[in-house]
Length: 167
Image (cartoon, rainbow, N blue to C red):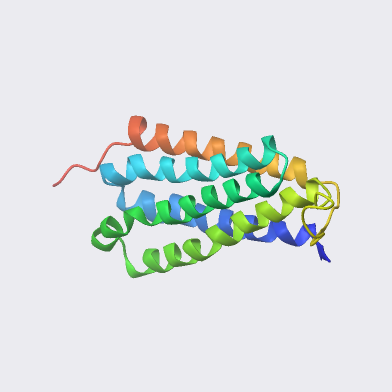
Protein backbone atom coordinates (compact mmCIF):
# COMPACT_ATOMS: atom_id res chain seq x y z
CA UNK A 1 0.00 0.00 0.00
CA UNK A 2 1.30 3.45 -0.97
CA UNK A 3 1.83 5.95 1.86
CA UNK A 4 -0.14 9.07 0.93
CA UNK A 5 2.76 11.38 1.82
CA UNK A 6 4.44 10.37 -1.45
CA UNK A 7 1.48 11.78 -3.35
CA UNK A 8 2.40 15.31 -2.31
CA UNK A 9 5.72 15.14 -4.21
CA UNK A 10 4.25 15.87 -7.68
CA UNK A 11 2.57 18.99 -6.29
CA UNK A 12 5.85 20.24 -4.81
CA UNK A 13 7.70 19.63 -8.08
CA UNK A 14 4.95 21.26 -10.09
CA UNK A 15 5.05 24.36 -7.85
CA UNK A 16 8.83 24.71 -8.24
CA UNK A 17 8.72 24.41 -12.03
CA UNK A 18 5.63 26.61 -12.30
CA UNK A 19 7.34 29.32 -10.23
CA UNK A 20 10.37 29.19 -12.53
CA UNK A 21 8.11 29.48 -15.57
CA UNK A 22 6.03 32.31 -14.15
CA UNK A 23 8.63 34.40 -12.36
CA UNK A 24 11.60 33.86 -14.67
CA UNK A 25 10.48 33.10 -18.21
CA UNK A 26 7.14 34.92 -18.32
CA UNK A 27 8.54 38.05 -16.65
CA UNK A 28 11.55 37.98 -18.96
CA UNK A 29 9.59 37.82 -22.23
CA UNK A 30 6.17 39.15 -21.26
CA UNK A 31 2.98 37.42 -22.33
CA UNK A 32 0.92 38.04 -25.45
CA UNK A 33 -2.80 38.59 -24.90
CA UNK A 34 -3.73 34.97 -25.64
CA UNK A 35 -1.50 33.71 -22.83
CA UNK A 36 -2.60 36.46 -20.42
CA UNK A 37 -6.13 35.10 -20.77
CA UNK A 38 -5.25 31.43 -21.21
CA UNK A 39 -2.96 30.87 -18.26
CA UNK A 40 -5.55 31.81 -15.61
CA UNK A 41 -7.97 29.50 -17.45
CA UNK A 42 -5.39 26.68 -17.24
CA UNK A 43 -5.24 27.25 -13.48
CA UNK A 44 -9.04 27.25 -13.31
CA UNK A 45 -9.19 23.75 -14.84
CA UNK A 46 -7.01 22.46 -11.99
CA UNK A 47 -9.08 24.29 -9.38
CA UNK A 48 -12.22 22.64 -10.78
CA UNK A 49 -10.62 19.20 -10.40
CA UNK A 50 -9.57 19.93 -6.82
CA UNK A 51 -12.93 21.47 -5.91
CA UNK A 52 -14.64 18.34 -7.22
CA UNK A 53 -12.49 16.17 -4.98
CA UNK A 54 -13.07 18.37 -1.95
CA UNK A 55 -16.85 18.55 -2.38
CA UNK A 56 -17.90 15.14 -3.70
CA UNK A 57 -17.62 11.68 -2.17
CA UNK A 58 -16.09 9.17 -4.56
CA UNK A 59 -18.26 6.53 -6.22
CA UNK A 60 -18.10 5.01 -9.68
CA UNK A 61 -19.87 7.95 -11.36
CA UNK A 62 -18.02 10.69 -9.49
CA UNK A 63 -14.64 9.06 -10.19
CA UNK A 64 -15.50 8.95 -13.90
CA UNK A 65 -16.52 12.62 -13.72
CA UNK A 66 -13.22 13.48 -12.01
CA UNK A 67 -11.33 11.53 -14.66
CA UNK A 68 -13.15 13.51 -17.38
CA UNK A 69 -12.31 16.82 -15.65
CA UNK A 70 -8.66 15.76 -15.31
CA UNK A 71 -8.39 14.68 -18.97
CA UNK A 72 -10.01 17.96 -20.04
CA UNK A 73 -7.47 19.89 -17.93
CA UNK A 74 -4.54 17.92 -19.38
CA UNK A 75 -5.69 18.61 -22.95
CA UNK A 76 -6.69 22.22 -22.27
CA UNK A 77 -3.25 23.26 -21.00
CA UNK A 78 -1.72 22.34 -24.38
CA UNK A 79 -3.76 25.02 -26.19
CA UNK A 80 -0.93 27.59 -26.03
CA UNK A 81 1.68 25.52 -27.82
CA UNK A 82 1.25 27.33 -31.15
CA UNK A 83 1.89 30.61 -29.32
CA UNK A 84 4.75 29.14 -27.29
CA UNK A 85 6.45 27.98 -30.47
CA UNK A 86 6.76 31.61 -31.60
CA UNK A 87 7.62 33.31 -28.29
CA UNK A 88 9.51 30.85 -26.07
CA UNK A 89 13.17 29.92 -25.80
CA UNK A 90 14.28 26.29 -25.94
CA UNK A 91 14.77 26.34 -22.15
CA UNK A 92 11.21 27.54 -21.57
CA UNK A 93 9.84 24.94 -23.98
CA UNK A 94 11.74 22.24 -22.04
CA UNK A 95 10.25 23.55 -18.80
CA UNK A 96 6.77 23.39 -20.35
CA UNK A 97 7.44 19.77 -21.33
CA UNK A 98 8.28 18.99 -17.70
CA UNK A 99 5.09 20.75 -16.59
CA UNK A 100 3.06 18.76 -19.16
CA UNK A 101 4.46 15.57 -17.63
CA UNK A 102 3.79 16.68 -14.04
CA UNK A 103 0.23 17.90 -14.71
CA UNK A 104 -1.46 14.48 -15.11
CA UNK A 105 0.75 13.00 -12.38
CA UNK A 106 -0.38 15.70 -9.92
CA UNK A 107 -4.04 15.19 -10.89
CA UNK A 108 -3.69 11.42 -10.52
CA UNK A 109 -2.11 12.00 -7.11
CA UNK A 110 -5.04 14.23 -6.17
CA UNK A 111 -7.41 11.46 -7.23
CA UNK A 112 -5.59 8.91 -5.08
CA UNK A 113 -5.59 11.33 -2.13
CA UNK A 114 -9.34 11.70 -2.66
CA UNK A 115 -9.78 7.94 -2.31
CA UNK A 116 -7.52 7.94 0.77
CA UNK A 117 -9.69 10.62 2.41
CA UNK A 118 -12.68 8.31 2.10
CA UNK A 119 -10.58 5.31 3.21
CA UNK A 120 -10.72 3.82 -0.22
CA UNK A 121 -14.54 3.91 -0.19
CA UNK A 122 -14.81 0.34 1.09
CA UNK A 123 -16.58 -1.95 -1.33
CA UNK A 124 -16.18 0.43 -4.28
CA UNK A 125 -12.43 0.81 -4.74
CA UNK A 126 -9.44 -1.16 -3.57
CA UNK A 127 -7.36 0.41 -0.84
CA UNK A 128 -4.39 1.60 -2.83
CA UNK A 129 -3.26 4.41 -0.56
CA UNK A 130 -2.69 4.40 3.17
CA UNK A 131 -4.65 7.23 4.80
CA UNK A 132 -2.36 9.38 6.97
CA UNK A 133 -4.78 12.09 8.11
CA UNK A 134 -3.34 15.12 6.33
CA UNK A 135 -4.93 14.53 2.92
CA UNK A 136 -8.02 16.76 3.12
CA UNK A 137 -6.10 19.69 4.64
CA UNK A 138 -3.37 19.25 2.03
CA UNK A 139 -5.85 19.32 -0.86
CA UNK A 140 -7.57 22.37 0.65
CA UNK A 141 -4.18 24.08 0.90
CA UNK A 142 -3.28 23.22 -2.70
CA UNK A 143 -6.69 24.37 -3.93
CA UNK A 144 -6.37 27.67 -2.03
CA UNK A 145 -2.84 28.12 -3.36
CA UNK A 146 -4.03 27.49 -6.92
CA UNK A 147 -6.91 29.92 -6.46
CA UNK A 148 -4.50 32.59 -5.21
CA UNK A 149 -2.15 31.87 -8.11
CA UNK A 150 -4.98 32.13 -10.64
CA UNK A 151 -6.11 35.46 -9.18
CA UNK A 152 -2.51 36.70 -9.25
CA UNK A 153 -2.15 35.59 -12.90
CA UNK A 154 -5.29 37.39 -13.96
CA UNK A 155 -4.63 40.62 -12.03
CA UNK A 156 -0.90 40.90 -12.75
CA UNK A 157 -0.96 40.04 -16.44
CA UNK A 158 -4.25 41.71 -17.38
CA UNK A 159 -4.46 44.72 -15.07
CA UNK A 160 -0.98 45.60 -13.76
CA UNK A 161 1.59 44.47 -16.33
CA UNK A 162 2.50 46.84 -19.15
CA UNK A 163 4.30 45.63 -22.26
CA UNK A 164 7.75 47.06 -22.89
CA UNK A 165 7.68 49.89 -25.39
CA UNK A 166 9.66 49.35 -28.60
CA UNK A 167 12.77 51.55 -28.78
